[in-house]
Image (cartoon, rainbow, N blue to C red):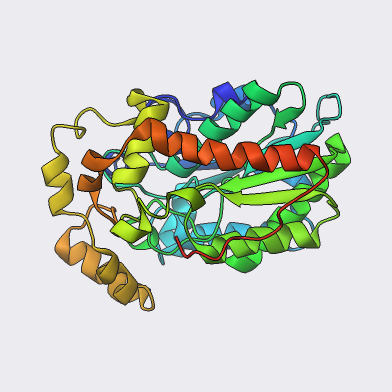
Length: 350
């Protein structure tokens, strides 16, 4: 079912996660977006019937108590324009699909999925779903190597973020809501599939996001699990070069997964133009405590959504970066299959 969902080509299809920030900015200001609420067992191909500009679903089974309304109110605050909930509410159509029982699947030894910020701008040349694309590039390779022991499941496509909000078309779920949602989502998967263990990954660099995921897993009924920030083995190529978001590292990895995921109108011919409008790490850190000031600065200076160094791309080996990630992920799966787990969020900020 995931082949109908994970982006394969930029700026195509019904899923908003396939589109770049610039492509979405060019839409008419009255464009309507669709947010589905569905069962985990709903096949992804069924969402195509909802039309265009479909946000990733949130799942009935994980929306216990007041959580559904809390998440919806937060999404209204963020998307498509941060801090404009009245207009956002008029542009977001909530569609509740019928509940359905999930299919019967053989109990997996390891159930793997990502918790990433799939609705997060990644500049003019990469799709919003860049983080999920990277995570599932890795998980798909692990599935091929560990079949039938590892089952790749549906992603959680919302998380905690800050830097995307001032640029628009990004959703911050907050750490508190993310923890609650992850716990209930993991519980729902546990009831459905009863896996021997769960392997949860992400690419998004926020340590607040990662800690929220780990807390959610700790709060869940799942006993055997491991979490991995997949960019952990790439710190020397990313954070040490101040290339945190949508710059050279992420461009290299997404291109390695599929060249069709980079916008040919921007990449590679306009790399110098991209570089001129990227934001430095120092500027982003300075602006982070005051989002109103951040928004004003972005609008005035016309930054393009990148916080990092796109020219870092020229010094990177895509196959090497991907193999470094796979090396640690393979080890994680081996440990889980042997009954061991690493249950922490990592100490590095990025």
